[in-house]
Image 1: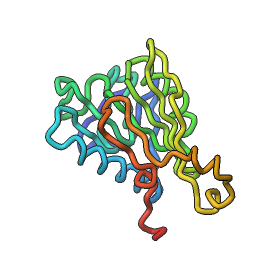
Image 2: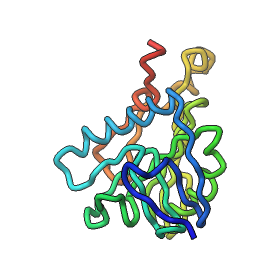
Image 3: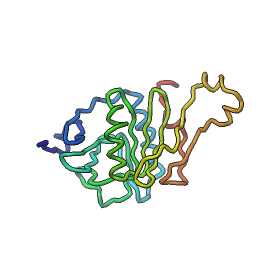
Length: 192
């Protein structure tokens, strides 16, 4: 049986289907994306009921069986927030892909979020610079849209019709008055 440890003594790992998976350190672009998303949501949610959480907070779906550490998430039900972590389902989750996490993020963890009723899931690809937005509909995730941060080179090659269809912003399903700027999600100060 897996012994669950909280707080400072806890090494970075997740428990998926009762098995421990050590978590690798994030690369710099991965960290910038989490910070960017976290900053946008923190500013928007300031003074509101829902609480944003950054990488490092445990979400305990089933102790000793499924304990995950999403890159970013939002909880609107404050009753599930405990000093040791979140004991229940976040409303919104972001997973930023890395080579070591792709299979888990797109597979077991996505299925877990669906099973427990996460309302909106973003899977962000930092290398190819796109955001897949999944919405929970009738208990199943459906791909709502894919938002792409195009390079200047890609934009220069597009026709006028293609350029007219490029989306630079979108809204989350949970907060209809919150506009996400795609450029802000992928902003990397090292590139400027």
